Image (cartoon, rainbow, N blue to C red; front, side, top):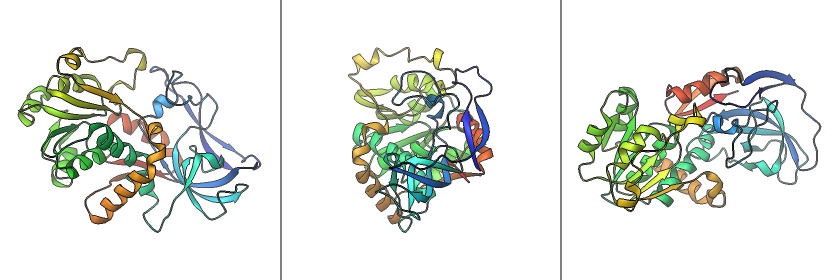
Length: 329
């Protein structure tokens, strides 16, 4: 029997229970499908969006379906020309211990190059998101001032390190002394702001006296508004996430000072990895080289067992995780 996490309803900001643990038998394999044993799954902030019945970059998970997730798995059986039994793959597995998956949703991983968990953190969609958002949209230059929110998180930490490697001066925003210390001592950022304990407006003025050239936004809300107020002329804002708004999509708000986009000729661009799937090898090679050279650090926070899924998802939105949140099945 296979253990799964299925949805019971769409998330609307008020629903208390949207998941249930179920047990089932895998369906028979069809042509182009593989049966996989899932070893690792990724917990991502976008999951609330995936179960919200609104227009987005992919269709929502319907009530009763297995919850969507990225994972690392071993192929047990195959009716695919692309994969054979014994291969390790990554892609959309679903939150389940085993499952039948279309080969179109998978790509192979080489465990001789990196650990399985690396392929879900720095060498997976998380790392690719930080890389492309910062390098392709943010385009930091030497001596520019870059601010990254949720900078100790999985995506933010990669984005911050990409900016540092480009020669920029990087200020990270994170919640709590422990996360801020990590940014200073381990990632060697040029300054940190503790949004839980510091006055954001004063701290931005202190750390960015000449203004901000690039802002990598993971949180939206009040922090985005405060950063816009200090953006330099023709600055760039990369909109990667808005986690401060994910608990109540219906009442999500934008910045009150949006007119500064006009007066300061700002560029604001949102994106998802859907825009960059064709360029994954570029990001993978950059991040793998940087990791092996010691210029890039990946950090993972690991939970055990499929039963910890809801605990893990709650941790993401409360900021209790330290690094990329994964579950080892």
